[in-house]
Image 1 (cartoon, rainbow, N blue to C red):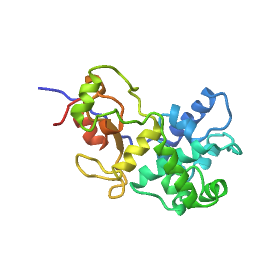
Image 2: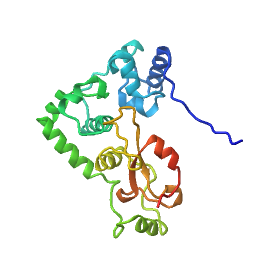
Image 3: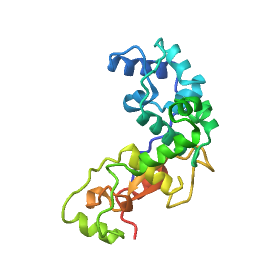
Image 4: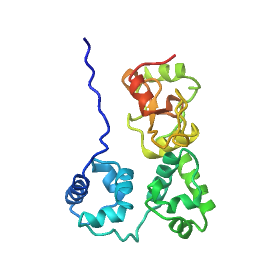
Length: 230
């Protein structure tokens, strides 16, 4: 009989395990404070899980015995990455009020965006321009179909396998945060986790370009694996 190894999401994680992991990552960085973006890179648990458990990111930080990060040097990129994360969680374009809503997992308030860009609409316009001008995102000349991408890929590699957050956000927004296989979306089911997937797998010569990327939910992406769907 064929055996399958499956991974089930734990819902009974003790508070202490989460707090210990926050301290571990802070120690790894040699700091006594920790931002959500820093934790996302090295942490074990999802920031949204932590926020739901403790009420806010800062509450978790304080309970872990760390200092709140008083940021005066927030970059535009951090603000845009946070906006992209909230957009993805909601499955649609956020309103200004969503940035101050703890349930969305936003790291920065609406006021932070308004102070930086003058208004929420200005922030959205700047975000759209930033995403559209991603250096990793480009179209292969003459490649208007999967077959074109496949032919070009067989000649040489022109892109990296890793999909940076800007290109990921661009594809998710292009696809309206909807799985292109089953149609599920965080807008309908908040538990939905979306991935950006290579249509022609990287292992089979696929490039990291707009026309070779699609939005899939975690379930469909795992089921697809490296299969090329005609």
